[in-house]
Length: 351
Ligand SMILES: Cc1ncc(C[n+]2csc(CCOP(=O)(O)OP(=O)(O)O)c2C)c(N)n1
Ligand SMILES: [Mg+2]
Image (cartoon, rainbow, N blue to C red):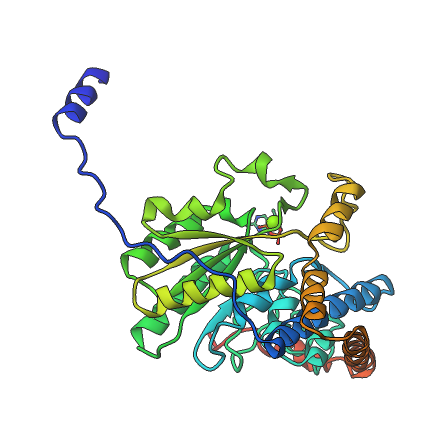
C-alpha cells in the first residue's frame, strides 16, 4: 500500500495553486470626530446595557442563560457600522445583545425580552439567546455553537440568488471555529462565491477552555485557507481598526469575490455566562486587559485628544445610563405574555 501511494504521488505532483488575489492590507479607519463620538456612544450603550442586564439577572428578574458581551463592544460596533442596514443581514450566536444594540434596535425591547415580557423582541418567548428581528435583518440569536455559520451561509445564498445587493455577516466564536459544519459552509460559500463575511470573535476562551488548549491552528484567520478564503487578523479592541478591516471585507464581498474571513482578537471580561465562576483564569489576567486594552477607554482617550472635553464625555455617560435605566424600568413593569401565547409561534403550519 505504502509503495503504491508513493509511486502515485511521485508521478503526478499536484499542480501549484495559482496566485490568488488577496484583499488589501486594512488600514485603521480615519473617523471624523462625530463618527468617533458615535462609535463611543454605541460601545458605551452596550457596556451599560450589559452591566444592567447582569444586575437584573442577580436580582432574579432575568432567568435562564445570559451571556454578556462586556469587553467585546468594539467588534460589533466597528463591523456593523460598515454595513448597509437596509440590505445586509447579520446572524450570531447566543452572546447577542451587543449585536442588536449595534444595529440600532431599541434597548427597551431587548431588555424586555431578557425579562420575558410580551413587549420583548421575540414576545418574551425567546430570552437572551433567541432574539430575532426580520425588520432589522437580524437573524438571531442561536444557542447551538456553530449553527449560525451554516444558517448565515444560507442568508448569503439568498442575497446572491435574489440579487438584492446584500451581504451576510455571520459571527462565531473561537470555540465554534472548531465545529465541522463551519467547514462545510466555507466550502460551499467559496465554491458559489457567496457574499458572506465570516467573523471569528476570538475572545480567547470557549467556556473554560483557552483557544491554545483547543485549537491545533490558533491563528484563526488562516482557517479558510484550504478553501481559498482569504483571512485578516484584526485588533478587536480598537474600534477604528475593526472598522478599517470591515471596509476591506465589505469591498471584497460586494465586488463578487466570494467570502472573506475576519479574526477579531478580543476578550470577554465576564464569565462565559452569568453562572460561570471563571476559575480557569486569574483576576490579574482580566484586570491587565481592562487596564491596557479596554476599547471604550481607548476611544475616550482619542476623543480627548481631538478636543472633546471630559464634561462632554460625562454627559454622554449620564444620558446613556438614563436610557438604560428606562429600558430596565420598561422591562420590569411591562406585562408577561398571555398564557395562550404558549401555543403561538410554535409551528409555521399544520402538519
Ligand atoms: C453544538 C454545541 N456544542 C456545545 C455547546 C455548549 N456550549 C455553549 S457555548 C460553548 C462555548 C463556545 O465558545 P466560543 O465559540 O468561543 O464562543 P464565546 O462563548 O466565547 O462567545 C459551548 C461548548 C452548544 N451550545 N452547542
Ligand atoms: Mg470564545
